Amino acid sequence: MSDKIRVAVLYGGRSAEHEISLISARNVVRGLDTNRYDVVPVAIDRAGHWRLSDTAELLEAAQRSLPVFREESENDLHFFPGHERRLQPAGSAGESFGRIDVVFPVLHGPFGEDGSVQGMLKLLDLPFVGPSVAGSAVGMDKVLMKRLLREAGIPIGDFRIATARDRDRIDFHALKKALGLPMYVKPANMGSSVGINRVRSESEWEHAISEAFLYDTKIVIEANIVGREIECAVLGNEDPIASLPGEIVPKDGFYSYRSKYYDEKGAALEIPARLDPDLIRRVKQLSVDTFRALDLEGMSRVDLFLTADAQLLVNEVNTIPGFTNISMYPKLWEVSGIPFPALLDRLIELAFERHARDSALRTDVDIPDES
Image (cartoon, rainbow, N blue to C red):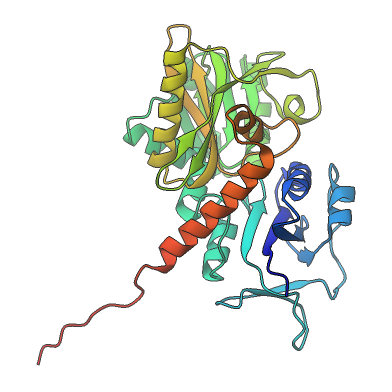
């Protein structure tokens, strides 16, 4: 058995961000030092089937969807909890692919970034990269996130929420009066700008809420914030650190899904952002405060607005940020002095550190002797 650390890289998933996950996972696999790690790619198709993959298949699949694994295969996986931490083929009497030391989820959006996979990995007693269950859940759900940030005194923009149950009672004119135009309509649980629309008039309203409700039963309506779009990467567990900030300058004022991933000229990236030292300090401190307020660990990207009067407002967080060639999280750490392979090393170290910390917690109770 190899003495290298065996890293299971989870990719794909049941999410509208499936294709982006493939690109991110490809870069993570390429970035992991083969002298230190054995990589075990695990593909998850859109139907939620898990299957052992290989690097060649992963690279070939990048930028397109994985096929749905309709037929049973010896590579269909069972996970076994406990200290053995092994992957075993479905239906196998004893054959195993060997131990798994740590899991690196590269899953964007629901069923991967929202606490669901993280909860399963905790039950399996597997160390994993990124925030744990609670942090992942609130980081994904913009309604819970905004409420927690507001409670913690973190500055955020004005917003309203609506559910599918109340759809017929959503009043465009009341929202227009409260939030002004334009306003932004978003699914509560989605990332990469999927399902987001800018509403500049009543004629755009119905399309915006219809599309948002395609992706979630809960939506967020946000006031427009005029300002620069600043992003900051955070890394760590109990003592997180923040990177230098970066800035996104969208071509049309809206950083859409197409602008992020398919239009090379959709936005300009300023890395690092052109900010004075005091603003850099404030961005970094607010990003760390946000990270802590949401109970995040491992990694997250914090997205903020900087207004003309130098006010900083937190927009949202991303708990499994992209690792594509144009993604801000690795680029920000690169300019902050942590190259990509070293960043992956540190993320895996943090996964082991948290697992060791949590494993030391008691799972029994002393019962007083009343005799």
